[in-house]
Amino acid sequence: MTKFRQLTVLAAGNQVELLEELLFLANAQAVTLVDNGDTPILEPPIGSHPVWPQTQVKALFYDERPHSEILRDIAMYFQRANIQIQLPNELTLLPDQDWLGASLDSFKPVKIGGFWVKPSWNDDPIPEDLTLLNLDPGLAFGTGMHPTTQLCLEWLSANPPLGQTIMDFGCGSGILGIAAGCVGADQLTGLDIDPQALIATKQNAELNDLVVETVLPSQIPSRRYDVVIANILANPLIKLTDTLNRLTKPGGKIVLSGLLDEQADQVRAAYHAITFDTDVSKEGWTRLSGTKVG
Image (cartoon, rainbow, N blue to C red; front, top):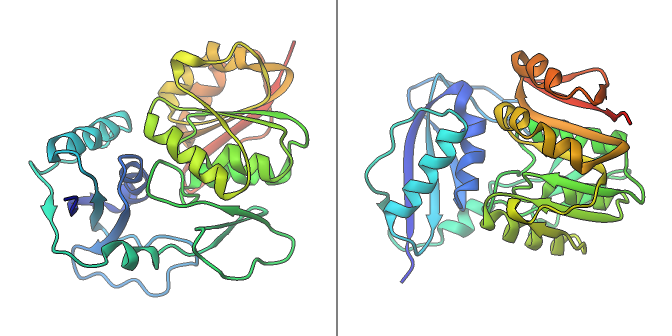
């Protein structure tokens, strides 16, 4: 019988948001942040995370796999993101109760650009002039809370891809490709190295009455796209320059996110075929966007 299990790790304040997203990518059902000391925070801004000097990050898993497999996946995602945190040897088994139901109450709708991002079970009214985007957390990276995702959603709000084809490279939960579909994109493709992310993308697409073609890296289509969005990390963005350039049509748009402000010049320099717009930064993260020449 599947039981709820919990992972608890300590993180510095500047690691918390990325750590939370990585745990969702590792199939956490919920992530809770708890002050590890006695540092009060009064009224953090709406939609933001409380940040303490040292934070207990507690991730809830409902997974039939052995502890070792879950911890192996978590370690892999931490390593990719250069997160150096010691993991325990096993997860903590929790007593039976409605852990998931309690955790769902913590996910509230949030306005990001012109989107109203909300979990499917939330019935709050949709503000006027916003585009509804249903997204359930817990399967893959991308709940809309991380600045890198927000930067991409804001770009889509300002540049709605009406009738255009979209490649969401490193799709995670599918949030960016689905958002593009919600504002008029015609054909959506999501690519990810993690099969679980492709499942999440299809499920979240269905919540929005959309269809997303999902592919693994070994199945990269030969066709080119009007818009290519890659919200991954700086090093993969540099290594994948040729691939992302090839996927972008001449005259098409490319959006690169997941890089720190200080990494922007290095990533930009790798994309010789792109005429870049002005960089946009949020909370230490930068979004690059531009047009493919020729």
